[in-house]
Amino acid sequence: MANSSKSLPTLASEVAYAAPQVIAHRLTRMALAGANPSAKDQREFYRMGTEKVEAFYESWNAMLLQTLEINQRLWFSFWFPWAAPASSKNPVDQLEQAATQILTSGIKPVHKRAVSNAKRLNKTR
Image (tube, rainbow, N blue to C red; front, side, top):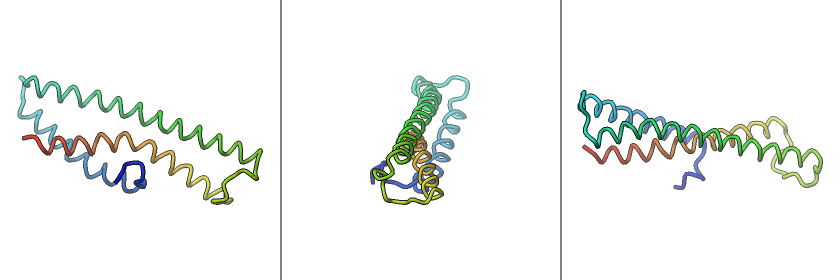
C-alpha cells in the first residue's frame, strides 16, 4: 500500500514496529564493531545521524506546507463560504481533520526511513 494512502495510526504503528528493530540492529553493530569499526560500519554510523537530520527537516517542512494549505483553505472558506467544501461545517471536526492532516504529513518522512531501514538492515548479517 502506498505511503500516501495510509492513515496516521497505521503510519505510527509501523514506525513503532520498525524503530526498535533498527535500533537493536545498530546497537548490536556498534557493540560488535568496538573501537575499530570497518568502513562499512562507519558509513552506517554516519548514515544514522544524517538521516535523522534529513527526516527532521523534511517532517517540519511537510507540516509547515500542510499548515499553510489548511490556513489558505480556511481563509478562502471565511471570505467565500459558498466555495468551501461541504465535508463538515462543524469547526471541531474541521480542526481535528486539520491536525490529523498536519501530523500525517509530518510522520511520513520518519515512516519512510524507519520502515526502509528495518527492511534493509534485516537483510544484513
